[in-house]
Image (cartoon, rainbow, N blue to C red; front, side):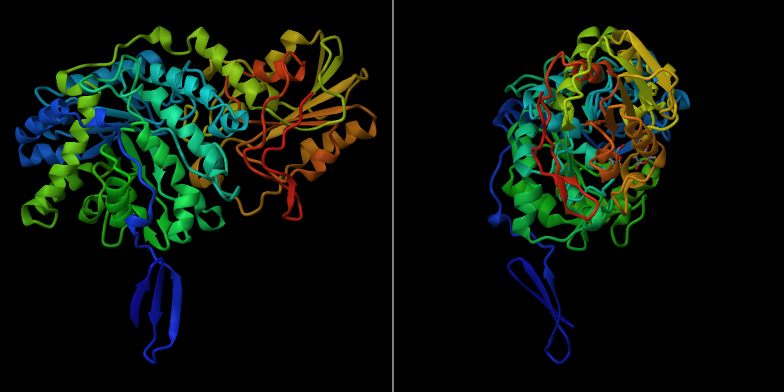
Length: 603
Ligand code: BGC
Ligand code: BGC
């Protein structure tokens, strides 16, 4: 077979010269991309001199160590003496001393143990998925997931949340968040849809810049980030939201122009705003895994898009490249990954990378460039001058962060239907149906204390309020019913239901149809009895709920609002009007659109 390409297309000819395959190529042409640029304040002369001097002082092992990130579950602080790694990460699972649900003090002590174990070396980047608040920490405010913030159509609100979250992260001694996710999900079946602000590239781009600036502050030449600011990550580069069938870690089959127009817009804004790091995507572009795509990682991202920060891999993402294992993968760094996220096999990776540089399989110049980028980020965090975040546990779950959470909940709700039953009068006799309204975990979704957001009880949210508790505060006569039956006839019923928490692949779906019968049956029984019904749907994405909509007098898409359930009540009672508009089109049973993008009613 003979293969060749014309711009944007890969062609293959069989032995007779006939066309046997034709598809979009996985080879980037950087000149066809728009331009962007990391701010000059990331590479000012004084900083570059400091970085170069530090680089020159490092031996081969120390350089290699900088490019490897281990996970807290597999590395002890004392291991750092023998293995001088550049970074550690906190995965979605696990915690200080194996404690999955740990308070801020235990996390701060953990950060301190690792950082203090680095003697004479270069302080660590400590990375964590603070994607809707500092969500691994008991007591932190859990904000609405990005889908809800996108619904609010208020980039400044997302920015204020990003600043509050950065402050909570820094307050526990960490200096790097794997956020924001600037993905542009195109298929609601993808289990990570809720991590994106919406399906529109322009919407995502309008949030990316302000949020990056809010996490890091504006970069200032010659100065480290201000206290309470940390490194941001634009992720996952590139095309994570475009995979076929919405399959997690799947293949995004698009022309280069489509890739640019749909999936790259958030990166342009994030880079211009000074994002210090970018995370590579697990996914592929036209069959080629992103972790090995030199054209996109190096020629486009670091070349055309002028990105001067560091590119981190995703969780063992390198092992999916042809010829690679978790503990050995020269092609990832050669393609442009600067730091391996190596939660399990960091020792083997270290040993192999030392050999690969010695043999020339990984050029010394490539290693030096990777380490330079890592040191640049560390310099910008003040780490090369020994700065440490100021630990202040009172910032975690601070009252003003809770108030901000409640404001965000109010603004994120989308009213899909209302025949006049809303707003609810505080004097009404309200029947609260089902148990979902009681469970804070169901309002938080994935990436909450545990990776999948499972296993959490209300006791794990000491600074949280359930929707039921919020309602009980405001409604004088609130009756409870698990299944919608009642003894005293209510004026109306509020039925809270939706998707249980999930993250990554576990949330992938084949069909968007919402199947659980209990909520639908309760709604239909109430409807038959002539009781007006208000549905509050908790979910990580739109689902096909035609039957539930038909049986509801009002229907609110509440997304995964987080720990401030009272914010839902504020709007149901009409203290404020709805602000949210759909960040994704809402599907109907026949595969058509039930409510278009931007739909959202007002009182
Ligand atoms: C996810 C990333 C996350 C990383 C660290 C990966 O599985 O794709 O978004 O930052 O794990 O938890
Ligand atoms: C996640 C991690 C998580 C791990 C569990 C990864 O894909 O991103 O954060 O803890 O899987 O195995």
